[in-house]
Length: 396
Ligand SMILES: *Cc1c(COP(=O)(O)O)cnc(C)c1O
Image (tube, rainbow, N blue to C red; front, top):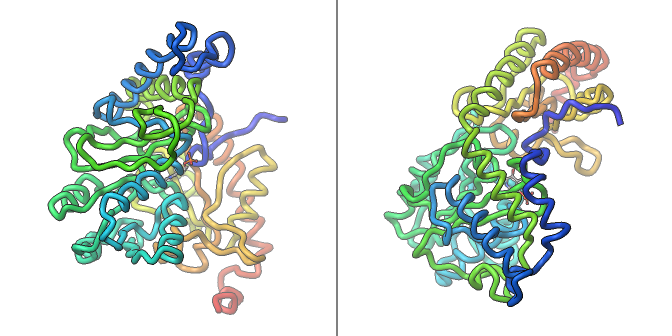
């Protein structure tokens, strides 16, 4: 396979070499079960404790507040189910309109099949949350509010600490899906009213298949996966030792290099974005230009389809992602882009570039060089070009 330019880090990241090195012994020589009575297995347990302390340190939390899971989605599901079990009489859930499917699909399921009432908080044109609507939607019947810390498509950051404090005053459990925020946004959960927080290893240079759920001490917790006594009875199943060790190493790495990493990545992202905006007419940034993650740039190129752009970028080995999903033959913009009310001519040509510390200036140069002629070619082929009238027909 020819070398790729990977700018899809909000979908998954590469495992850091330091992380890979830390986890490898637990696939080979040290394969013991940490619950075993013998020294061979038992000697693995302190490694889990170290990893737990590393995750806690990155979050500004206590080690006993960290539960290892298999992924961000499992953490999200566990958190919501636990919050509902803690307040069985309450039947209302508040989320945002732009949550990841891990929260969105679950809550839609709970509404459709289990009779819960769901309120989805709107976002404005810049992807910022409607805090007034959020305030009005909280009722004595509200069991849990779950709002992501940073959006995976636009990078827009939500004021979760403020929202958590508001929920705390009303006795409502607050959960945040922080999968995109952990390692990028400084956190000190001990000083917040956040009750639960989800994270995922593969979004911060650990491998796929490991996640964690933070549960603040004193928060009522009901396990989702039941069985053995692992994780102090809060999540059954023999521990994913290599994954947990890797997550600990990734958190340590993130804690030490977060600031430098953010600065470097932001510099690359801003150059990519500014050059593309300057070189390609009718290009627009989706999301708040200031209030967002330093690695994410979601751009709309008017009159073209995101999928076509992606396919042509792919031919140059450039891996990005689009904000639309191909459903039943029609290319619908993603729920995030739709929630922001991005105009039709813009919504279909949205592309997300999400960078990491492993991207180079030369890679950014290559994208800046390759993309303008692609957009130009697609626009000349497009029936939806400026003044074509076709766009208006397609809107029905
Ligand atoms: C990737 C992602 C998830 C899901 O995490 P998995 O570990 O892949 O299950 C959840 N929420 C957000 C915001 C994400 O970006």
